[in-house]
Image 1 (cartoon, one colour):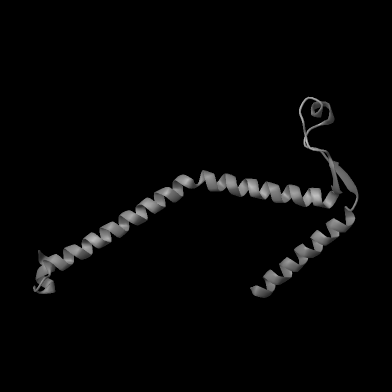
Image 2 (cartoon, rainbow, N blue to C red):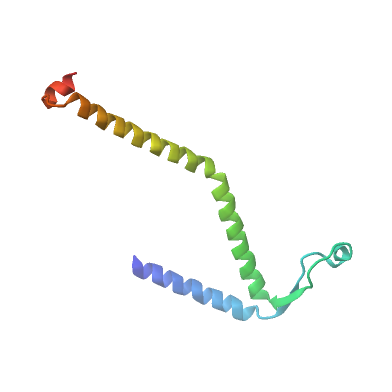
Length: 113
């Protein structure tokens, strides 16, 4: 299984290198279109290779998706944490109940009570 993962990662790396070599041309990135940038102050445009714009967009999209899912799943994590603490409280109550009922008594008699 480890060999399959390594081969897969090597193939992905080769594909990324091929995409980067094929897209070395420069592209200009602007925060706002030229028509709107006259009304609002914006940083100057920058020129980067196309592959950096592609990979940057992919990484930015992944980060936005991860944050979105983390926020969306907050209620599920909070519910799980509440149930975990409730379970721990109930287990400690059960343990204390067993200890108080079986002080010096036989375990079978404590179970019958």
